Length: 522
Image (cartoon, rainbow, N blue to C red; front, side, top):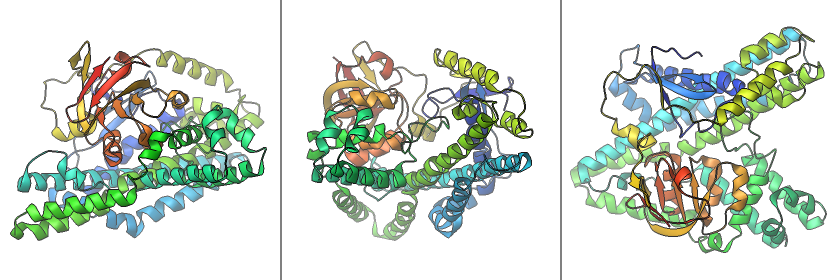
C-alpha cells in the first residue's frame, strides 16, 4: 500500500534488512500487515497491529490503535491456549493450503483460470500469515506471562525465566540435528574431505562422479526435502536452499570442523537434562502455596514455546517456498508468451500488475517495466533508509519494555572508538576473528572459532552457530531469534549493537562478553 504521509512510518532493520522486490512487497509484506491486524482483532488484543508500506522499496510499518474493545482476559486465555489451537487445526490448515500451492500449474490453464489461480494464491498467503500472527502472539505473550510471574515470585536475572524454556525440542534444532547426521554420513562415506576442501559450488559435481558421492547426495536431497525451504530472507525472489544448496554445504563444512565436533556433547539430551534440572530447582524455590499454579503455567508455556520455530518451518519456510514456486510458474507462462525474458523477472512485477497481465494472453511486453524496477532496487540498495518517515511522533513516548526485548533500541549507537555496547543476549566471553556476513555467499569465509558479525539472523543461519566463538548482531533484543538460539547453543552473544557491521572490520580480532553486552574491537 501507499504510505500515508500523515502517519508515522518506522523502518525495522531486524526483519527487513534489504529492500523488497515489488512482488514481495505487494504479496508477502501486505499479508504481514493484514495478518497481524486480523490476529489482534480475533484475539481481542490491547493493540491494533500495524499497517505496512514500502518507501523506495524499503519496508516500513505504522502502528494501529485497535478498532475493537480489547478483552485482556480473553487475550490471555487465547495466547496460553495457542498450542491447543495449533494441534486442533491450525497446522492442518497450513499444510493443506501449502499442498494446494504446490499443486498449482500456472503454465497450463486459460487466462481466466490463471487469474483465478493467482487470486487463490493471494487468499492462501493472507490466511497463512493471519495464522502466523495468531501463533506468534500466542507464543510471545504466553512467554511474557511466565516471565512476569517468575519475576513476581523470585525476581533476579531477567533472562532466568526464559532459560526454563531452553532445551525443548523444536523445528530449528531438529534441522540442525539432521545436518549433524548428514555430516556423520559424509564421514562414513569418506566424502567429508570434498565438503571441507572444495569450493561449495564445485562440490555437487564432484560428488556425482562416484558411487559414495551419489549416495551422499541422496541423503542431502532427503535433508533438503525436509528443510530445503529455508532461505536467508523472506524475500520471494531469494532462491531457497533446495534450489541452491551451497549454504547447506558451507554449513556442513563448519559442522565437520574441530570446533563443532568439540561441542557435540551439547546435544538435545544434555540440553533437556539441563532444562529439567533448572525447572526442578526453580519449583523448589517457589513457596508451596504458589508452586502448583506456577507449574501449570509453565507447562502451558512449554507447549507453546516450540511453536516459535515450528510455525516458521510450516509458514515462513514451506509456505513461502510453495508461493515462490507458483510465482515462478506464472513467470514461465509470461516467458512462453514472449512478455518476460526470464521467469525470475516476475518478482519485478507487483501482484496487481501480474494479475492484469494474466487477464490477456500474449499482451504487451513486460520486460521494460521489470528492468526499471530492477534498476530501482539496485539504487535502493546503495543507500540507507531513514529510520522514521512521514509525520514525526508528536512526543517522545516511553519505550515499551517488551519492544526492547524483541527489537533492542533501534537508532541508539552506544560505546566508543574501541568498544561497542549492545544487549547481553547469551552469557559467556570469547575472542576470535570477526567475519562480517551480509549474505549467504559470505559464509564461505567463516571458519570454526570465528565471531559472526551480521545485521540479523533467521532460523536458516543456525547450522553455523555450533562452530562459532561468538555472535554479534546490529539489531535485536534479548528475545530476538539470534539471542534465543545462541542461548540454546551456549554461544556468547551480543545483539542490538547497532553499528557492528559498519564499525567492525572483517578479519579484525574482537572480544565478546555476552554477559555484559560489551564488544571490544582489537
